Length: 213
Picture: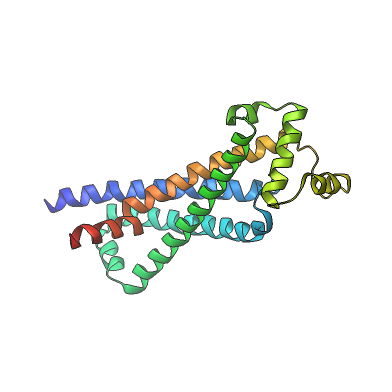
């Protein structure tokens, strides 16, 4: 029985490591390519950048921790038992998990916002990836400007366009890059939540709720 439990734990640790490492890769890809993407977060762009870096770093820690735990569970399972009994380790893993979840939540909100912007112009992800015509790009660019500055009038948008403060017509490359980033963000957020549900804060919360019932 104990042997079967350990074998199941190896699978659990390996699955958690795979999810964390997948989230790590996507997180850093998003961070490193964010400079060429369109920002539609208004004045919160700096905060979102910090969140993205923090989440990618947290996923990196989780990835290496997961790989180490998988190795320990295979060769020295008592080491995992020792780590799990340490309060500092428990607190550290919860903190890192919460940072990852915070990043996933932020990425999810930005993805939803991006989908709404495209939907408002009747544009699908596929169309955004394949390329839009000049009129579609102009309308989408103005919608992005309104998203970054809620309440701005059409006359002010035109004024800032002439002044070069607002992009008059985003390029298809910029729109494609931003759309791909949203897709990667959504997948990364899904991996993070799945990892937390498998062996992180979400699972601990669920276990606690079930125990109380």
